[in-house]
Image 1: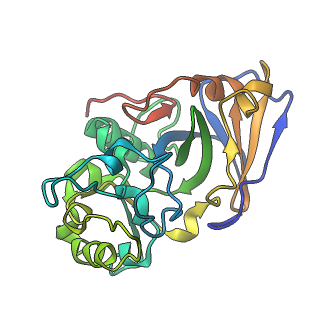
Image 2 (image 1 turned 90 degrees about the horizontal axis):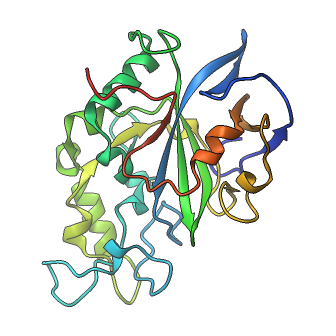
Image 3 (image 1 turned 180 degrees about the horizontal axis):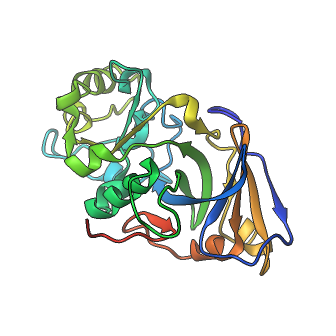
Amino acid sequence: MAFGQPIEFGIREKWIDWSGCAFIRTDEGWTSCRISFSKWDGSSGEWVEFAGYRARNASRFLKETCVHRPGVPRSFDHVELNFSPAMKDGDGNQMLHDPIVEKTNPGKLHNIMSAHKGDSDDFPRTEMENFHLVCRKDKRNLVLELIIEDVDYEFAIHGVHYSCLGLDAPRMDEAFNHPSALQPCADCASDNWVSMSCKVENVHGRYRSGLMLTGPTSIAAVMEDGNWLEMSVGKRKMLIPNEIIQSLCGYRFKELLVFPTVSSRV
């Protein structure tokens, strides 16, 4: 499974009696890992290009007017260009805006990254690989669209503006040249922050082919105590216990939902 391919999944009825974290299959066998859930606004541009104005199923930010063109909506969400080639840096890294990462305490992000790099004493291992799971809201339900390996939160920790990386100009250009009747506001599109980065080859999943996590016909509705959600992550497998899936029901995403949890202090 890679970027542009649907997430493959299944349910294991029984495995081990453990509910505090997920597990990833490595060459040495199964090892515990950290998973960090986020939520992005949906878009018919599939997070590759601007979609333009939508009257339905659009965010409040998209519909609000801005100071640059009074009376006219912004007509975009900042996540919409996350996988555009225009959002790459000089080393081929994809620069992403994640609104939930932006809301998360920098100390918490620091501790996630420290454990990910193997220089932390965080529970339960001094080294714990972190996976960034991107959900999309579908009415009142959550759909898991992407799993990102080896994500870097350093940009959110230090506060890096688009202009610092030269990304404000291509975002403005994309907005100006979008062929919709109501174009995205170019000034608003160029005025925000990078939250994290990754390599596209480490992004797994496909927009609109995700896994329904919550809702009446979802994984959360059919999983039982002791069940594990099994998913492909590239050439590896991930197992997530039912207790973690159930915790997504009703979560408001005021910050990343992280398992195992980490301290906000450094």
